[in-house]
Image (cartoon, rainbow, N blue to C red):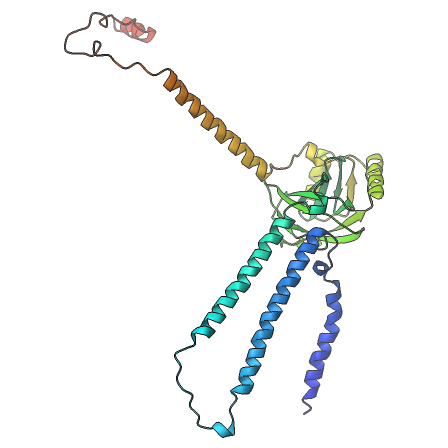
Length: 340
């Protein structure tokens, strides 16, 4: 049997699979957030390849150096208690690698959670991205328009997606522009991204959320600023407004194509409150409570309750000044009258 045949077939299959690697969207970033994530992924892969290279080199070295030979048949090695230096090396080096990758990951996460450095001076374009079974709604509050299953944005402009869900938990992901972020009901999450290159990019739901999960793909179209302004004007002039009844019908329909409206559902179905706003409200309420308690304490200090004097304490003898009958209440008078 020819032993080279299976080996040749194996390497041929690898060659045939290589073209599939050319369209990995994550490794072809078109924006600063996606580029930061891509660089982190590549760095992590290089570190792991370095670890694998060292492991395989040591593995081959041990196999060759300590292989069984006819010249040392019956050889019994000396008993060793261990090598402190080797043990220190294979404990300390993994700790250093994990610490390094942890620092890089935390730094990357902080970067992508905020507006990119080159766009910090811009006011971001706010787009509310809400999901329902099995579609995406994109609301533009500044422009007063809304789209379904596609989103347009200008190039070289900071974009802030504010996401929530009308159903199950979903995850908005445009691999070439940013990382994924979950969209949940009754809460708002934020995703910052921007595009350096005009073009059409695929967006999807990255979280399995039910039977229609595979259909939750949309197009993210990056236009020039002039083209974007023209598109907004065209939508306002030609598209139908989104009414509350139409929106309810949209939520009920599971599979639908692209839709465009000249108004948004935010006017009659506002989004949930942002976590930062909730925290600010809670802090404000707590401050009000604290201030109220402090004012109450200050009033007690300014107007203390009168302490009973020694003259008014009961010493067994009635005090004429205090021995005055109290006026009867209406309830007592009524009770006395009924008893008579």
